[in-house]
Image: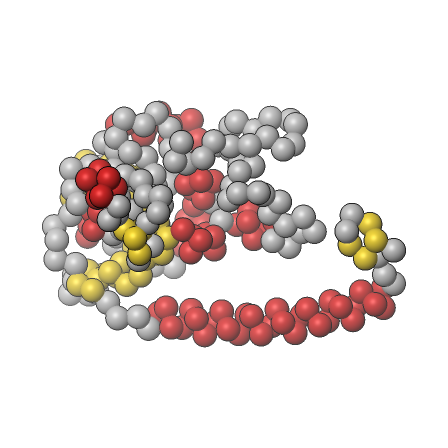
Length: 245
């Protein structure tokens, strides 16, 4: 029997299929552990540039952003100068940050967001979204460009803009990403890791739930169903505007 393109079988047949999949899931978990170990073993790059950020506590250095912890995780949130609201995709991910921070801050990890817009320009949107995480501005510095999440207009026009470690076919002046930094006891700061595009999927808990379901993510294009969380309507199937529109 086939219902909604899925075979319907006995419990015994289902268990056989589930146990076969479990063996693959366990193999994937072991491979993921190996990959995570390789990620931790990557070489580091010393940060010597005196980056300055502006946030709720005024001007701060990169060292200040660690807030006394050894590890700093920065989500590069797409909110450019003059924007009235943040990228819907970045907002989807940011909805998961406050929950994670309840635990990460007790495990020697500081997690926050950085955007290119001046700090005052995203305060109304932050209040609208109800977020509590720290969010600072890199406006006036090369931080976003240096960490691969902002392209210069002239590079976009020339087709030489890069994103996700390659030349981008659809770059923007602001793009999403995540960067990790480590600060040792001597106060030296190192860049240890950055990821972009689909590499950010692991940060979106809602996607991990959807991947367990019969319909999966159920999207024709990435995040085509998703909206800012205050703009969902009762009817299913409504679509969100793209980050690049």
